[in-house]
Image (cartoon, rainbow, N blue to C red; front, side, top):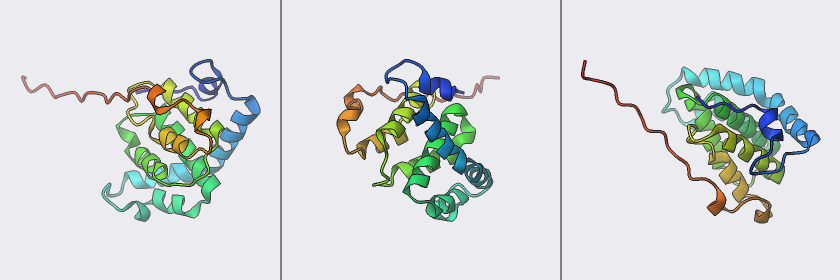
Length: 168
């Protein structure tokens, strides 16, 4: 399981300069506003049919109820949650991230993308979906020169699945 340290990941040196504290706090405040509804939706969807159409899920209804700013905050919170607790139980969260990543024109900001990239780099290769949302969001930025080109992003390594030992 990979873990990201939240504020520590946002403020440490690395591939990107740290975000100013006021900017990072603003991002966290927006994510905290959607977190209770997101937790509830994810929990409800964990016990439902995984093949259900996204729009019919609790996460789908939540996403459909939000404006672009709210949907960006939901995406960032879900991305953060998946990076902190990345394991088999994040299936619903990863689906939500993919659905948000597929939505064009959400008005992502460079600060939001920088924050998600820092989280993604901190999570490491165990989190195979860690660049899904930051890649999609960065492609929507008005100024592509604000972030590294796609060629500078690390390759995504998909973890190998363990085969059960059947020799017993």
